[in-house]
Length: 385
Image (cartoon, rainbow, N blue to C red; front, side, top):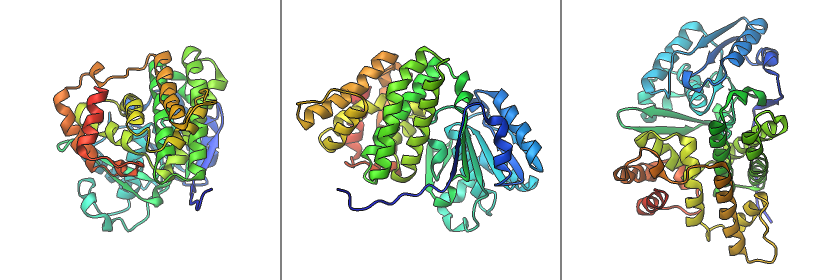
């Protein structure tokens, strides 16, 4: 029996196959002069970007494409983009891409309306008095729901770290999802994205801020991706599987927009900052290791996870069922040939202490049911190496 539920998701959600040509009719209800933000290395389907731009031009007073950022933006890149937004008088940002694009869009929505530089923002949160301009998020593939969250992340190149800030004003005005936009994804990219959804869904269900609403969404997300990911990877033309994986990503985001991600996300971010590992890859590699380490902390939740993974848990103990959840994850990894060791990538073992130190300072680390110290985090990293 639950004692409380607090959930909010003020964004409009539009989900339909082959629908990007309609987007302008929805965006015009949010803004009239739209800046389209597209980070080059996250645009896997440029044809759909052109369709989106044409639709917005048709239904609003203007669409300005800003694609000067080549890859993961740093603070200086955001300052340049913020100045551009101010100069062109955009009243809405449409973010087309993936995780980095959405974090950049949320940062720019605030920076462009306030007199503060990205590098100074962590010490000047009080300067963010003016509300952000509205954001429309359009994922060009499953992004473990990063389009849904009210969190901004700013990357710092010299320090090799990322600063995050949660601000409920940063919920998107609209999330627009066309599953077929991800048709250009390669099989390895789709496998990586799907495993990241699994990891994020499990972290969401296990979060100390989880409730009945977020847990239900997270488990449904896990169920959808577990049942459909292998099918989609083996047959990219399977429209039903593609739709289900896309919906899993959205549900995952709607869940962790409230309950928040945890240790695995923190480790993946630190591995990306220090070692250059893709965040989704890090999420996947660390998932079974973190699950094993925390198995006895939330055994009851693990039983629910095992059920979502369609594991047979009849006539066994709670702990045995929890172990089945970890085994279920590993079976999917093996079926999809997902890397399970950090050593399979160009990561030096000597960098792991630096990674552990950064993880211990990231806010997401505190969301787990069991908060670990730096040494315990390093132990998990070594086990995953």
